[in-house]
Every structure is written in C-alpha cells, then in structure tokens.
Length: 226
Image 1 (cartoon, rainbow, N blue to C red):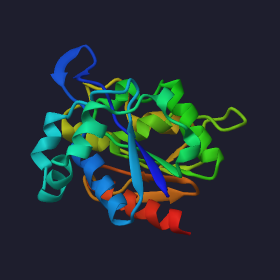
Image 2 (cartoon, helix red, strand yellow):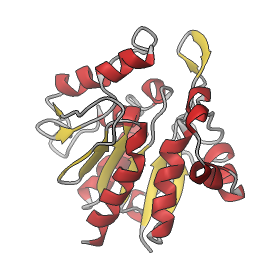
Image 3 (spheres, one colour):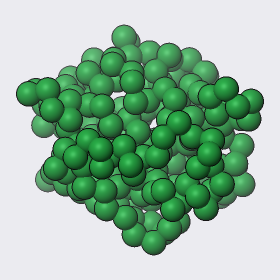
Image 4 (spheres, rainbow, N blue to C red):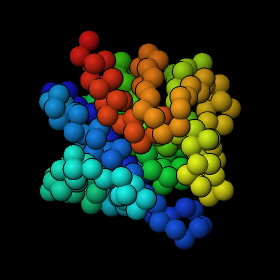
C-alpha cells in the first residue's frame, strides 16, 4: 500500500513571545483528504511525538471539508494527540514525506536531525519530499548523500517574505523562509501573495501558502502514480 508521512509541529508559542501558534489545520486536513481520495494512507509524525497544538489564527479559515477531517477520531488521535516520534518511524515504509506548516514549525523543523535523516532516506529511495507554506522550513537543512544542501539548485516555494509582512509576523519569526532558501542556493519561486501555487522540481514538490495544500497533494498523487 502507498503511504505518506505527514510532519506536524509541537511548538506552542512564537519562541519567547507568549503568543499561541502551532499547526495551521487546513494545511494538514486538506492534504490528508486528497490522500484519502487516492487511497493513499498517511501516518503523522512530529519532532517530539505526542501532542500537536493548533494555530488559532488558522481556525479563522476552517471550511466544512477541513472540519470533516478535523472531527474524525482517527485524526484527533493519530495527528493531534499521539503523533509518532521520529524513532518510531521506518523511512522505508513511505513513498513521500509532507511538511505541513503553521508558524510553529519555524522553531522545531529546521534543526531536527532525526527528521532530516528520515526525509533524506525517503528521497534516496526514490520518494518525494513535499511541503506547504512554512513547512518549507523542514527542507532547509536536509543534505544529500554528498553532504550538500538538498535544495541547492532546486526550484522551490514557500511562505514568502511579502506574505510574512502581510501576516504581520515578520518581527515575530526567527527567520524568513525565502531568505534562508536563497542562502542555501535554492531558487525561490513565488507567485501572487495568498494565491494557490505549487512547483515541482524532480522529487521536490512545494506549495507557497495555506491555499496551496490541496494542490501539493494532487501534484504528489500524480507523481506517485507514474
């Protein structure tokens, strides 16, 4: 059976700033809903395992389809309360890894060596590394078999600096995804702010913002089916 690993954040606040953040719910549920339609199963992982908080700002954009997944006991249990730890995961079981966003990921995705190893092994096995919005932070420090940044020379996208400014969070985040991608030699491609956009470069599939999760899923489904 085809299987995808969905990565979620454990981060509750904007670093030392005592304001709530976490997973942007729709970025997980919209992706998972498309996987279900394609009969592709998913597992949920987070840097620490266990509880995954929700970004309250993301709840303003919840739709009926998002709620239909959110209310499922399986999603509540496996994604939000008992997500897997990296040590519980065998990369050989998955054809792809998907990094969902929410501002929280900027603190616990980039420097998690265990997640980087899992992603690199999936990639080396011919699988796909995918992300949406801030989830691209999880790709920043993954390295290839030669020790080079995996995103170097690749076309990828994620939450843009302009979108961060529009969100009013530029001064609250530890870095800007667009800047960090370019520092590592990645070609950051972007479209109009807050519009659906996805780009594929080989085994990398990335979406620009929260409105791109479904498009990332559909692109991955098409790639896996080939």
